[in-house]
Length: 298
Ligand SMILES: NC(=O)c1ccc[n+]([C@@H]2O[C@H](COP(=O)([O-])OP(=O)(O)OC[C@H]3O[C@@H](n4cnc5c(N)ncnc54)[C@H](OP(=O)(O)O)[C@@H]3O)[C@@H](O)[C@H]2O)c1
Image 1 (tube, rainbow, N blue to C red):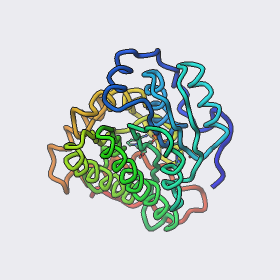
Image 2 (image 1 turned 60 degrees about the horizontal axis):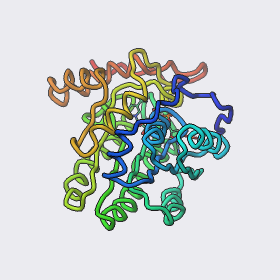
Image 3 (image 1 turned 90 degrees about the horizontal axis):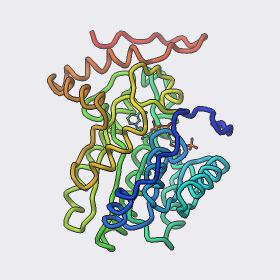
C-alpha cells in the first residue's frame, strides 16, 4: 500500500503540543523509569500518547512505518520537551517487525510499552481481501503478542513496568461489518485482562484501553464515517491516569455512555445494535463494486 508522506495527510489536525507536566513526570519516572516505546506514534492515539509522555519527560522510542515523518516528529518532541528520542520505522504486518523493535531497544532501559499501532476496515468480511484480513491479524494481534511477550519479560526482570494495549468498545461482542476488526480487539482485551493478573506480582501494570469512536486517521483508512467522536487527547490522558489502577480504561464520556448502554443488553442484542451502528458508519462501496451492503440487525 502506498503511504501518504505529506506531514498532514490523513492526520487528525488538532494535536497541539501539551504543556510540560511535572506531576505526571515524577509519577511515571518513579513507577516505570525514563524510557517508553510507543507504536503507531505518528498518527492519532499513538501520537497523543507520545506527546503526553514527552510532556511528562519520558524519553521516547517512536514506531510507525514512515521514517521521514517520524524523524520530524522526534525532532519536534526533543525541541519541545528536551527528551531523547529514537525512531524505528517498521511494518508490524511483517513477522519480524516486533523483533526489530526489541533488538533496537536492547541498549535502553524501557519501562513502558504503548502498543497503539493498529487499523480496521469496514464492510462485509467476504467482500474484502483475505490478505488484508490476515494482515490485520498480524498488526492488531500477532505483533501485540510478540511485543507484550518481549517487553513483559524485560519488565518482569527489572521488577517494574507498564503495558498499555489498545482494545476498543467493539471488543466486547461481535460486530457485523467490522467482524474481523472486532475479533482482533477481543483478542487484545482478553490478553490484557489475563496479563494484568499474571504480571502484577512482578510490579508490572497492564491496561486495556477501550475507547469508542475517536477522531484520527483510523476512519479514513477503514473507509468509515464517524459523526460523534472524541479526541485522541482524551484517550491518552485517561488511559495513563488509569494505568496501575484499573484493568480497562474507557476513556471519555462517550466511551463510558456507549459501553454502559450496550452492557444493558444481552450479548446477542449488542451484536445486533452494533450491526445497525456499523451500517450507518460504513461508507458506500465505490462505483463498480457489485456487492450489496447487507441488511444487518434485522
Ligand atoms: N480511532 C478510533 O475510533 C479507535 C477506537 C478504538 C480503538 N482504536 C485503536 O487505537 C489504535 C490507534 O488507532 P488510531 O485511531 O490512532 O489510528 P490512526 O490514526 O490510523 O493511527 C495508526 C498508527 O499506527 C501506525 N500503523 C498502522 N499500520 C502499521 C503497521 N503495519 N506497522 C507499523 N505501524 C502502523 C500508523 O502509522 P504509519 O501509517 O506511518 O505506519 C499510525 O501512526 C488502534 O489499535 C485502533 O484499533 C481506535
